[in-house]
Length: 254
Length: 284
Image: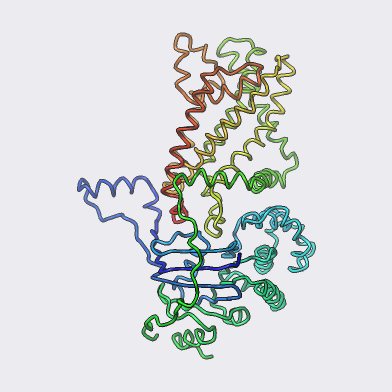
C-alpha cells in the first residue's frame, strides 16, 4: 500500500474557549441569558475559521513545504492531515501511517533518561516498544548524544531535545511525516544528517510535509509548495515558483 | 501584499483519488477499546514507566507507599476499635484490606478527571488513542494497589486470617473494576476537560464518600439501618475486592450491582465519546 493524502474542500472552524467559558458558571449564565432571564453580553464562544476550502493531493516522493504568514493555517492543516483535528467540512482520506513532529512535547518526560524517552516518544507516535529498542543504536549514532542518552531529558539543551525528537520521529522510516518548525534548532552538522535521513526515507516512497518560516530548511528538503493566506490556498505546485510568489508578497529579497 | 490570486493553482483531476477511508461507526468507543486491547504493550509500558518515574529520585522508592499505608492503617484501626468498641485484632485485618482497596478506588476516581488534561501535550500533537490513556490509568493504579497489598498480606498472615481459594475471586473483582474505571475515566475525563470546576468537585465528593462507604466501619454497626450502606454502589465495589482478601465469598448481589453499574456507565461513556471525541482537543 503506497502512502497518499487526499483533502477535498477542507474547511476547519473551531471554537476558542477562554477561561471563563470553560467554567460551569458561565455556561449556566449563557443558558439563562438565551432565555432572557438574565441579560448579559453574550458569553458564547468565539469560532475561528482557520482553513477555508483547501484541497490537496499528495503522492509518494512529494516533499511539500507549507508556507504563509503567521496564522495562515499551516499548523491547522498539519493537524487535519494527521487526524488530530476533524475538519468541519470536506473530506480527508489518508493512506499510510502518519508520524507527526509538531513540537518536542509528544509524550517525552523531563525526568526520564534519553533512552527511556526514545521508548516513551516512540510509543506515543504509534510505534511498538520493540521497534524503539531496536532503534537505540541507530538513534544514538544519529543524534551523537552519546552518554547524554543516559541522562534525564531536563539536562538537555533545546537543540539536543529537537535532535532527539526528530530522531525518534524518523527512526522507523515513517510513511508520512509531518513536521512543524520543530527541527530548526539543530546546528549545521545536524541539519546535514537530518537532510540525509529525509532523503533516505523519502526515497523509499514516503511523503514529507513541512510547515516552516525557515527558508534554508525548506530549500533543503522540499520539492513542492503549498502557499496559504488566511486559511485559503493561494498556490500549490513547484517549490521554487511558490517560494517566489511568497517572497514577492512579503517583499523579501531573494 | 498582493490580492489573493484566484485559485488557478491546482488541477488534481489527473491524480486518481484514494479509496474512501472509513466512516465514523456507531459505538466508536467499543471499536477503540478493541484497538487499544490489541496494542496492550503500549499502555502497559506507559503505566509501568509512570510508576518508575515517580520513584526515580527517591531513596526508599515504593517503600514510601508501603510505610505510609501501614502507619495510617494502624492509626485508623486503633481509633476505630476504641470508637466502635470492637477488639483490635478483629478490626485490624478488616480496616487494613478496606483502606488499601479504598485508596485504589478513590485514586481511580479522582485521577479519572485528569486522564486527558494530564496528557494534553500528546493529545494536541499526535493522533493518539484516547482509550489507551484510560487503560494506562487503571493499570498504574493496579500496580500501586499491588505494592500496598504487600502490607495487607503481612497483616492477614500475622492475624491468622484464613486464606482460601476465594482469594482468586480478586481477579473477577478487578475485571469488573476495570470496566467501571475505563467508563468513568472517559466520562469524567471529558467533563473535567470541558469544565475545570468539576475537578475540584470530584475531589470534594470523594472526600465525603470516604466516610459514607464502609471502609473503616462495618454495615452491621448501623444496626437496623445496615441496609442503607448498600444503597452506595461503592460498598459493592469494596465488597467484591475486599471479601476475597479476607477469605470470604462476595455475595452475588454485589456482582450484580457492580456489573450493571459498569454496563450503564459504559453506555453513557460510549455516548459521550461518540459526540465529543473530536472536540476534546479544542478544550485542552
